Length: 566
Image (cartoon, rainbow, N blue to C red; front, side, top):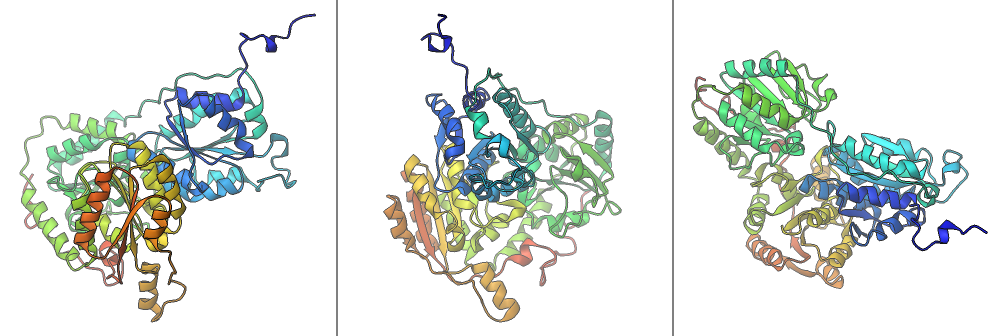
């Protein structure tokens, strides 16, 4: 009788689909997976376990946190963040984080469970079945696929990773049914080499350089694509060569440090763009919150450099559209402008812009004082997760940012409650840096259970919770529009006792100086912490954040004064 090779001790064991998944992720350099286990993922989780710690499997207390943590990890490091959830309710719980990652052009890979392959689309009421899960995922991803056999898993993982490194980085989703994860087949695991960035057409670069060379007052608009491409150094070189002010969008905050002589906040952009005769938009959608182009190309030359063709088209009508990687494009422009005669410094002009911005921001108290306390307590290399709170709104134009990837927002999704879970992902990716998340009491309620996750993994993250016992922005707007508030008051736990119940250091403060001292102490402790800040109603900053907002503060006719000749 022939021996059974499967029983021979030294015979190689054909891997499962779950093992192929884990091995390919590890071969691609993935070090962390954020997930919540469940029956459809048993063989995927076992695949991770079989790697003996090569990948750390980190389990939060809610599936919503898996995608937020992956996003915080990705945007704060530039590496791929991986989340993994069961199908149906698991996927639906993770959708808010995926939508945020999509809005913020984040390299997030979602490994989504599915029901058994033969039952997909049959609507037979299988466990965790939802109709059209694939189409649901497609609404918040740029790439999605379903693995229908274990031999396909490794290749699809590489395809998903390639999509994250091609064009605009937005989430990718790979669905794997449990029978595929359990089945065995020879795998196709191999190292992953990211595709090379696409450089813009050389002839178009020459044309763009010619427009910039002849401009008397060029302005650069820097968006999130600069951060995604790691192009801050190239941006600085081009701006300095041209002596061109850089108007930084909300998505691009950190592209240049706030203190750079040519950097301007989104508020400062109002004082710059009306006077530009040539505008270079890099890695930005180049539209305002009404969907209108930031600059009319009938008034000034508009050059757009973007990795996504859709962001070069209508409603924009650029003089010149360059499709390609921000870093490659900026480097090519710097090279093309080699030998450009030195231009007069715009330091004095930019000081006028900054002075005007400070005049507009100064009345915004107590938010300004809280922001100064945060900046004083957070080290230069610290990361701030800017949640949707009264202090956070002003933070987008008033918080000094020292380095790329050190200031994260939810982008145009405006995802309330994203902050604390996102901070935990950033803390995993940056274990040597302090991470601080600011939230209102309303937003913190979305993910307060993740205090358990911070404690379990000893993450170096501090939650600062501004507590006014309300959805404060909603309440102020209700009173302003209707003369009363409705449904916006909240009943909260004692946040300090809650944190302490999880074994986390916590205290309560009510003055900016006390916040600065408490936060400095919490950061120095290098362990999870929470600070509750009791606050009251605050003035609206919206006229400073949205130029079309009623009662908007108009910029002066020309805060630059006399524009110096090129």
